[in-house]
Image (cartoon, rainbow, N blue to C red; front, side, top):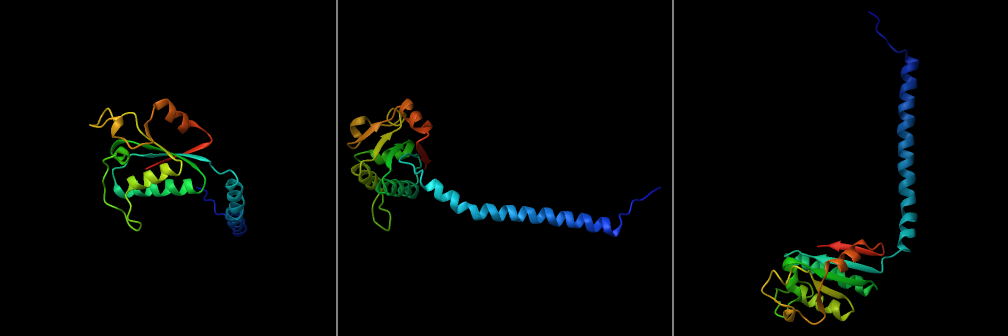
Length: 165
């Protein structure tokens, strides 16, 4: 039986080859990291002008953060469209009450009203009213009822970004 035992020079060659491959991988990773800021700057020039925020969470803090981010996007010039589904639809009710959130001591519903004053739009999902005890008359001024074709059009638009909470 023949057992192959590589010579010292063969083993050194294999080790050198492995080190070269590892070095090439590290060099490639370093180049990608170095070029990332340039890529990010190029993307900054292609900002999104319009967003769709889909809020369906019943969590008070999640609702609050969605409204904080929506208002901030509006303040930075984005057209903000909010779709309120399930328990989050309650934010659009005239009778809405919730504990105020710190640090500003406002409710998600108050933040939604502020967004509407800034020119944002809001609608409850098409299933909200038929599956609740409320009617369109119970919604605050400026809040509509979404239609699936309208929202699908927004969701599929390449010029609009969708966020979900």
